Length: 346
Image (cartoon, rainbow, N blue to C red; front, side, top):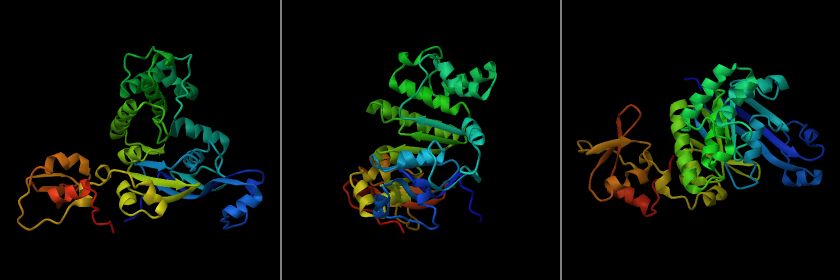
């Protein structure tokens, strides 16, 4: 079976700041050390990043402040020009296209949402959401209808004539999301979009984000420094440190099989019950065993705990086709809740 072409393919991406940065990596197969960079008076914000992001997945890039995650996502859309490397978007080399072609691609195929909402204060909600379509030259009737559809999608119907100053922080961010979706992007970049919000509103926006993804199935690159947010949203996560990607994998993989001490420390305080799924804690089915009910293999332990901890029920775990692939029971759930590690993934 052939491997599907990724939506976004990154190979050997570097972003180096300082005088002479563009010529510093000219020699082939250059992998400078910190000492090399220091001698040249240069700073590497992104170091030899390699990623394949698949169609329809939520791919989270995370790390502490200064890790390079925001610089990397800006390189993906060429808001910042990489110093070296290759970026393929649906097979097209973004670093080889003209400025005009790049502008058209951003207008029609890319959506972007940032931490600071950047709404235009003199425009209404309707005007803000319709603005990128106006830039495209879409006629007023069509762009306003599309904007109204997006406003309804994010739950702001009735506020089309409000101005940004009349909205709460969560409502302003919804406007930003609606505006980015108005162009029907193929890929959606979100750089810490909820970090400026209060915890309760942030949780609501995460719920809204997951609801929208369930409807739209976008390819999403989401930046955060919050691991709880990452494990709630992500299909896969890349952890960055000092500009380099340290490990990439599903949340469960990072918890159970940290590649380095840094990843282990980064994930140490994360509640295993939020991350581990039924698939990770199930045991084999005993022939002839009675199963009281079934649940999806992706169900998190915290979501099934109340159903099983105070009973002796045996719950079958099913795959996407509805076939039984294992059983979760009281003991396997209790082991996770009290901190006993499940078997490590192969």
